[in-house]
Image 1 (cartoon, rainbow, N blue to C red):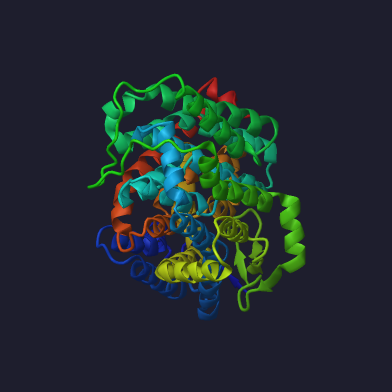
Image 2 (spheres, one colour; image 1 turned 45 degrees about the horizontal axis):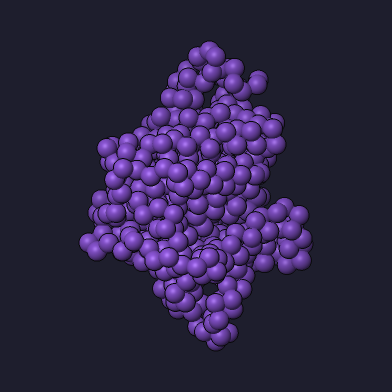
Length: 544
């Protein structure tokens, strides 16, 4: 057994700087030196392994096991979701149905700003609520490419929009994970997260349209944007506060999209914005399709939605897990790494169990929907299999990048480097409510998962809050709320975006497109948590 140490150099500043070095190198090589994503990820992973062994004293075998464990997790479930989401898109594109689908969206509104609102914000939130784990980014980015948006805008806008639905994504998995590691009350965490997200349910729809269209372009469609936000926040609050985290994002997104579609039956902006920023815009005047044609074009995505929701039902998922899941204790790592105070209240062993749950994985639900859709579209079995092989070939480097980046995150986690960074924020005293959101932002930015960030820092947030006399529910929830703003700069999310838009090698461009937006929203979230902590009446929103 090996115990983590969080200040190996005897100097908190230097130890923290070294702990953050792998992430700094990854972001620098990817965003500013414009390296290919898989090379930047491999460099960051190599740096993490060297620092984990030589500075933090992690045994070489444990560091290697952590990296292999992370790489496997990167392929299943994360890479598996991306692969199958793109497979479905490729089938729809090959059949010609995606063209009809695109034209059906255009017939609702030819205005590109409102298409961003409906697809990136509304449909993306719905996919996040049901699936999570990168599926919304992959599907939305692919859909926006089909609508004629250039790759940078398609991937960047999908990333910016994929923020506020994240804490309640995948049927509430991040909040459930947060409760498990913090041992706080699940409903109080759900309530605290809902109130922290409330103003951003209005801000983010405006923000994502502003990123695309600028201030004047955004203000020209403000009624639709405001309605989208209000129609999202009200059901989110009602469900999260009265029912819990499981269906909050799913219901809120459906109400939001439905409200905007109804508004567009009686209201349109004075000037229709037809530009996507691409050199050649797709024709915005959509032909009139018969209702049967439109239904046929949307059928694969309806099948996808149904399958994702079925696979997300806890009882069904548990049944599949019982039937097929193989639990593999990672050799040389499982229960051999000890996380110690002050990162946790009581020293505990860190489990390392890889669940080979291919049938219960969300990616299998997407694959099943793709196969059913392929048969529905009239493809032969040989064509369906051939398209899958072609999709695997096209995403091979993306899968390598995703697995390498997750391997980096797992290495820093088991080496205790993540806790070193988190403890540095904990030293901010009365300003900690602001920095608690940034801890979550950093966790998601590095791990790519709100649930993983909550697993890493949820317990520490409670410990720090109680030591400072702050509300532990508020600080733990801030980890999820602040973390959602880090989703857009997560390297694996960026790779998913570049893969979905077939824009390999431009991951650095996407990172630069979204980085300042991510940081600005995270800081705003920190300020809101600070206000909710100290200023009446906002400090009474979350029950103690």
